[in-house]
Amino acid sequence: MVVRLRLSRFGCRNKPFYRVMAADSRSPRDGKHLEVLGYYNPLPGQDDGKRMGLNFDRVKYWLSVGAQPSEPVQRLLFRAGLLPPPPMLAMGRKGGPRDTRSVDPMTGRVMTPEKPNNVKLEVDTEGDEVDQGENSKS
Image 1 (cartoon, rainbow, N blue to C red):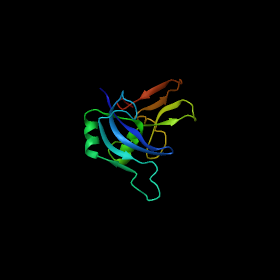
Image 2 (cartoon, rainbow, N blue to C red):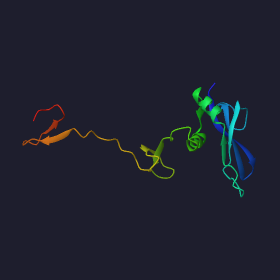
Image 3 (cartoon, rainbow, N blue to C red):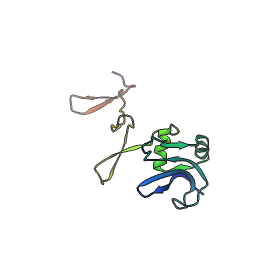
Image 4 (cartoon, helix red, strand yellow):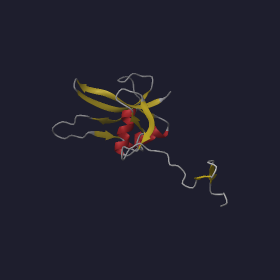
């Protein structure tokens, strides 16, 4: 049985309210669950009510036994400080295929793999390139 941490929708039409649930991955969205772990209100209203509440001890327990958070729950747990930032992928264009390069979550820029600085290329008089690494003699 694969356990997922996911949102279950409550509330009225156009006024959603979600509960964070630990549930079997095969059960429906609003179906049978194992445990209620908290809530999330995307529309807190005029009185500035609480937007999110989580039982941190139980969330940590479910993550420690191997429960997989869904993408929205993963973002909520990142905001709460329980998880590292989720990997972001750069979008090519809207509706198009995703670019597989990773994006730095703090700056939003595409991360490029760093090249080693100790490798230099020299050109011989004949036009051939010779690799001059750390262990080569000059």
